[in-house]
Image (tube, rainbow, N blue to C red; front, side, top):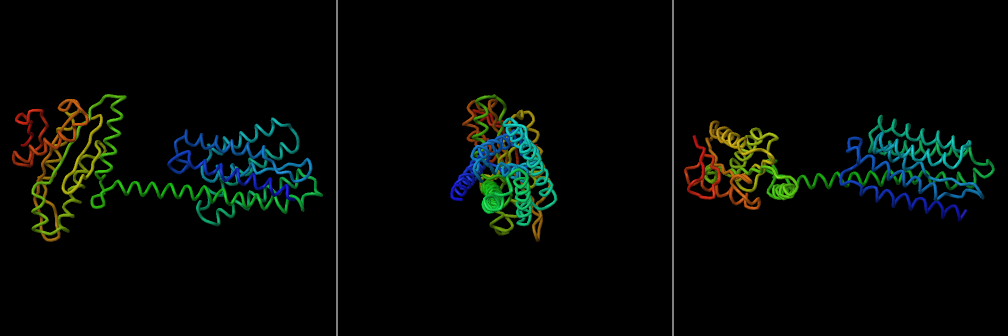
Length: 371
């Protein structure tokens, strides 16, 4: 009995360590919609765990070995979908038949296939994170495991040596495996949500300055491999301070929300839109020629100037100023793009506001697109 307990402990330790490392495969939870390569790696990793479990057998009686190879199949079917489940199932079957073709091999084949299909069906029909689903899957897998052992093991040792230790270990291991993977998934989802919230402006829902800086850094790194057009459009609401002073900060916040919506509708998916602070916004275009950004900027200016902003008690006409810089048409060094776009925005303000200005190295020759 002591030997069996040690064998069970070794198997459970391997399972827990393997599932912890499995959680490091991807920064996102593994789902049926994950990239196919991620799901393939997930299936291969679970296959390795299963094959190791088949090596670390539990000696139920002299010369009688059992293992917990089915638990990675349960995990694959529960969380990963058909692709990783198929991979780990095939790996187990091939390895088992390589050891010999007999009743035990065919019984193991039926057992693993039944585990894969049954778990997949249960998860498809029931909520995946519910305790009753965990319990049903675990009971299903444990019952099948007990049935297989009853078929292949000598009956005189079944009750004492197997049913008393291996079957409870199978149940507990399956439960813990599902619990660990679930907690890893929920933790990743929570961290992802927190990262997303940390990169969003709380008022407008646009990307904030932190997110913009990270994205701009990624753009610069991509330029090392592929040279392409990068255009930065900076935007500032004209005389916004007067809105806060006259109508209050709540009205100012409403103007910012409406302003962001107009920019969002006008930019759509063509650029990376962010609020960089106060009444300052920016749009970073990657791979979009300057010749396409210029008319878009003018359309945004018209969208803002042509329709007043609706407040609780009044309609407020507002305009905005726009500064443009383009790598490498107006700006030869990508690191200077922000400064050059800000310089063009300042030029727009100086020239009377409500206009689009394209940066020029010679400030006096900055190009204005005011109509």
